[in-house]
Length: 354
Image (cartoon, rainbow, N blue to C red; front, side):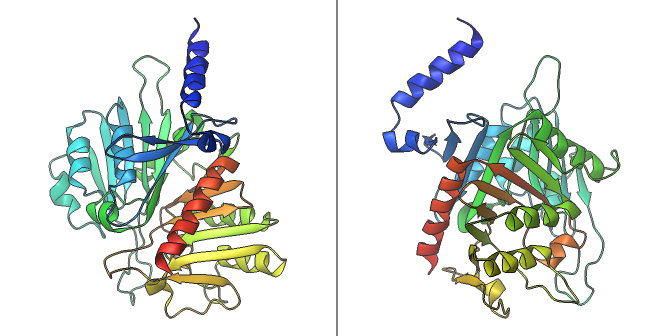
């Protein structure tokens, strides 16, 4: 039997034993005991996309998926804002071919975590506002590009990204999401972003598309988000840690796109962390200020669901600082099945925090 027929046969048998409702909606939940995630089983992206959600007090599904993704890798390049979870630190320090970057200004514990590891580099960006308590721009990525190949052609085969910070606080206290994408083209773009930060690649590596997947970095994140929101016809559901209104002094094209969508009759609903939104006036936008159970817990998502068909996630908060020089990424995935899952999670979070 050919390899492709073996794969098809295996997927067919797998589908037969899954709950009918799960198969009907185009994805299944995979339970690994220590963590759970969702996997597409239908459409052009079948078996190329998996994703996981997290809420406070639960076993960390994003952490489990991240560790599962990294352990068998032949080569890893990663960039993470605060990568201090002990399990991840041990894995990355112990891996012979894992090179990484963290933010020196915001990760005070990273020097101890990775001290002596010459494959890990601290990055410090410039000043955003000298009057701000968090005055520095942020190397805000949370991604890893992975190569599993032992034979040529080598190169990045998968990437894992999302809102999930690689530390204990995110794993134990926050609402988070993470997505793994099997695509040489998309993973290659993340690899080039890593090389750009290291000074080994010139220019922004995106936007890059691979069929129903699109990725953008840094100054191209806001235009990608705004473009998808501008194209919305029925609904936009957002869950984001922080969103800032637009002003003449500090324009925010993502916020402007959301207002424009609302004004043309699109149903726009936004979940955001109440502590970040408390002093902000969002006008007529339907913004739900989610009250966290404690000051140490955050609604840390950065995702949008467009028309029940497209999911956009990544590191990008919907604020002016994110487009002012931060290192960021967003990934758009056109998949009604994935959008169904993210929409259901949006409702779960809303119900839990209202």
